[in-house]
Image (spheres, rainbow, N blue to C red):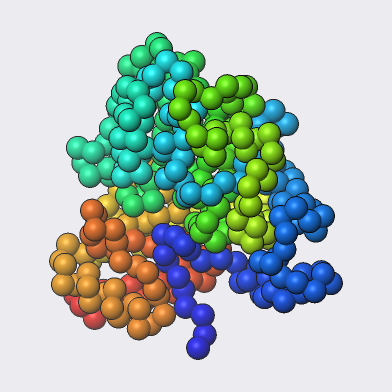
Amino acid sequence: MSRVYNFSAGPAVLPEDVLKEAATEMLDYKGTGESVMEMSHRSKEYDAIIKEAEADFRELLGLPDNYKVLFLQGGASTQFAMIPMNFMKNKKAAYIVTGQWAKKAYKEAALFGEAVSVASSEDKTFSYIPDCSDLDIPEDADYVYICENNTIYGTKFKELPNTKGHELISDVSSCFLSEPMDVEKYAMFYGGAQKNIGPAGVTICAIREDMIPEEALPGVPTMLQYKTHADADSLYNTPPCYNIYMCGKVFKWIKNMGGLEAMKAHNEKKAAILYDFLDASKLFKGTVVPEARSLMNVPFVTGDDELNAKFIAEAKDAGFINLKGHRSVGGMRASIYNAMPVEGVQKLVDFMDAFEKANS
């Protein structure tokens, strides 16, 4: 069977070249006679893998030396608790709630202190990004938190919020390495790898060193302290070795593609094909206000649940999989991450056009 076009929100499509290269090394990594899956994380071979992955990640983002890079386990959702556990010194933090993941992070923070919602788009099913130019941020807030790209709802911060001097922390899970970032505007950014970067099971955090507490807040377990992992270069315990190896290969692939500027152009081209079709279509409609549209996640509907179901079923038969939208939005969602080729989006649009003509 030939490969399908996988529009999953995550775990998501990976570059074919990366998968093929990893396949050739599965049984014997560079003459070691073993797979990276079997390799000791304390070996010199693995030490080279993780160090090279970090170096390439830093190079892609232009990340300064005063930021620590951590490869962690527990998914991005564990960060919802780790962030307040490590940074809520004043027991207060500001949250901008623009989707389900930001809302979950906000609720988790409330377990450790006062979480203040300073802006929200929940009133319109998270279909827009609120104006964040003049927010009422408490003076004693330890940080301002955002989820930069909203996987479920297909919105993206086009401008970072005015934090009024407070530290900015961002969940970038579904836009990680899809375009350049002005990294020094963030005290911390992090994301699960399983959308743009690698297999599920590793979360990558970049944290400015002066943010990491020398002494943990009372009651924080050792494994949930950023200092634990920063001091041990992500090797305090056995890391998700194979996943980090795969991420390293994706970093090389992005570099070979021309880096993050080239990645952005690639992603803008794909998004334009799909959004232009949706704007012209009489059957399919996008659910997000144009000024907040994500390059990565594109939700759309027909307005008829039966027709949505028919489209999803026929699309799957035609080789376009994982197009069902999240239950809170309904309809469809095409996630068109870095590794989705332009050809895949064009073929999807051709299929949508044929479906519209057959069902109008």
